[in-house]
Length: 213
Image (cartoon, rainbow, N blue to C red; front, side, top):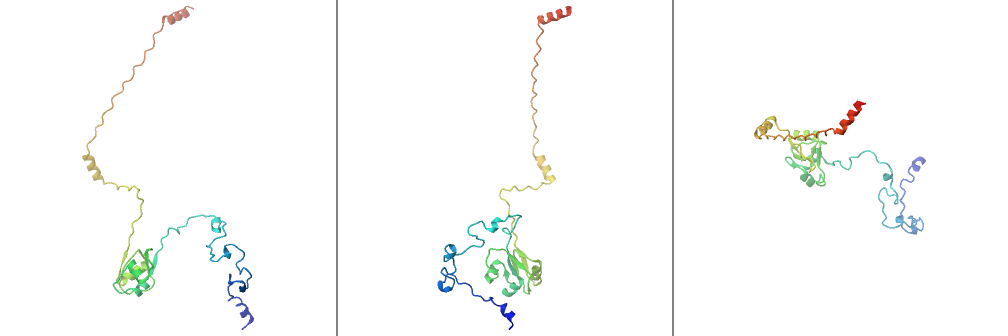
């Protein structure tokens, strides 16, 4: 063995520090736990990203854009190779059968069948999604595929637009409904205009006097 082969392995199998094992552990009086604080107590654990109470790094950095991670649909994946191993010819494959056979953990997530592997037995499969390659292999083996259709969510108070009625139906309803005769509104009589007051004799006299001058 050469010296470079020894040095590259030096420290590779170093034993971890066994903190809290008394003074005999070789790390002093506090046994590698330091003085006071949460880390010196037994049962101490820290969640990821905890920075001693100060604002965590992931909260200090700016947030931009949109992520669909909280709303994405997570499927339980099952390949046709697994169906070949766990089921017999003519079996019905649905979520209950998959849970019973141990291919799916629970009923929480929808089922998606993928086409990895080969399938030589006829199965009746009911799933939420099936890839095109898996569907081809299932049908070639003599089986059938049923896709579970889910109703689209709609707001309860949303008004549904009525479909436009055909022209014939509109004409029939127009004939059935009687015509409503609108009464003419009474004419409004205009108020009589006030006559101008007659000229006084004093005004006439003043006019005559101006003419004499």
